[in-house]
Image (cartoon, rainbow, N blue to C red; front, side, top):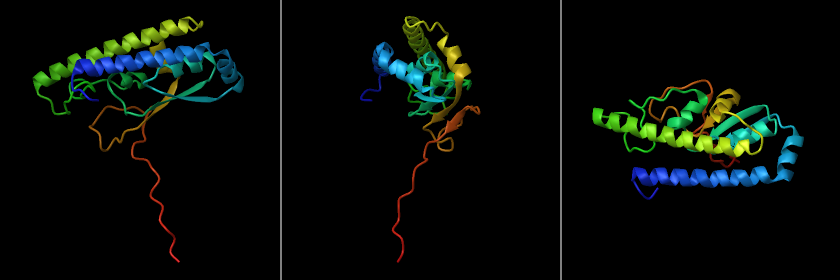
Length: 186
């Protein structure tokens, strides 16, 4: 991000969310793709947690098991999707530049920022709910995610990140990579 401004960061996230929702709408309007997905009878769907389209899409095409994936680790209200408690008293908001050792005024600001993120998330959730209702899926998206997501694969390393609350639904896969290939000795 080019700016450290909280307003700029939030504006970027909201703009990104709006573009994702527009892409989702194009996908839902594509009858061929929707019919193909429904007729394939997939057992499992994997979707990015930050992009909420997949959760409603999988419900619409009757995919029974859902795995969330997060390319950027877990932050703020994303934790609620896997029932991880949010702890703004010591877990920094992604909108802040704080670490886990915050002063009391920083904790107050962090709490405020966490609530801004929560409100923005609720706005995005409700906008997707309105979109899905146009396609006869009337649901509480937060509840759907809580009930349907088996687990979330998070691109984070629990040993290198700050100490956070966790749950069995959250699987840290950061740092998992293939080792460099070596030549075989003669």
